[in-house]
Image (cartoon, rainbow, N blue to C red; front, side, top):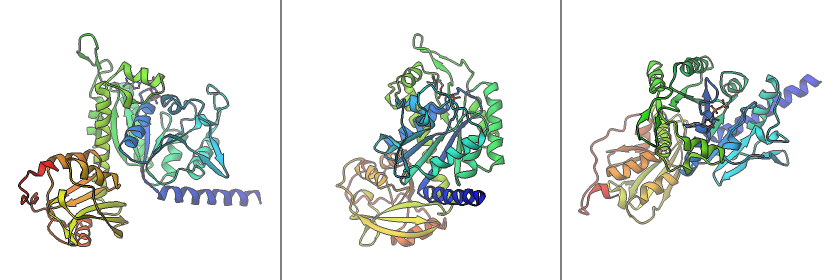
Length: 401
Ligand SMILES: Nc1ncnc2c1ncn2[C@@H]1O[C@H](COP(=O)(O)OP(=O)(O)OP(=O)(O)O)[C@@H](O)[C@H]1O
């Protein structure tokens, strides 16, 4: 009887986890081979910077023995509240929700002394019973190494991809190679490598000192043919911010820009993946239209057709009227609709830069046709780019929109 009850509970939990994961676009496990390399700093920054761009993000800290996320975000003592049967996440901002194992502690400095099965149980519970709602990103901060926590995440979260954080010196890189091999063994794709603590810019002389060397992360990425997402320097401001419970978006140093560039690279790589998958992933594709067909003049179209694609099929088509034309307004509006891709006849460089920065893939040079036909071609990889066909009948440059 007891076994049956356990089986039923596990099955019900599996179903809850599946239902939750169906509503998460991207699941990212932030890993490191070694402790203290800045994995939690990167995980919280990814969540906060993506949140700042309008994405809905869940940040889950499953680092049982050293949960840092709550401290880094100033949420120490973060309690886990339950309403009915559902655990409520903490809202760091309107669109960044946080759940940390820290929330189970009576006192912030209490240790959790747990063996494997308890760790597996709590991770599954956090996936099944938290009221996350639909998410664009689920970012998971796991402990260093390749133990129970990353293994449980890899085996439970279908479609999860890893971001591996390292410092540049050989002793850290040796452990990164283990993380990469772990990912290969559990068939979890590596979305990219980030090199943290890469050089120190001296505030007195302005010279860069490679305290832990520099470039090892990029070389490792190249060796394993993995994407390199970028570098962060050793910046005393990062420590001060972390100790004060403030995320890296509060920094005024170049480190903030570098983190932003890492996020842009990650979004770029993800959008590229979606395209390569030939529409098997979910996509939301925007097309400027006039009289039911593609409008070559992106900034002055009547409406946008927004087509939702699931598993390579168009499942929904809407028509939305954009706000009045002004520099940068329409690209930002398209991104705010949650679009992953945009198909246009022509578009200026400034608009393309905004869209790319916001993670929207731009397919430029499409012919005049109905949105459904264009998306069908796009999904089959048969959409042929002619030229940047923005018509200039209004006598201005494409770059102005
Ligand atoms: N680029 C950086 N420059 C300076 N300090 C940094 C940098 N990145 C992280 N730190 C600091 O290093 C310490 C460890 O960072 P963090 O907790 O993110 O590492 P971790 O890899 O998650 O550690 P753990 O092994 O405990 O999980 C923190 O004090 C953090 O503020």
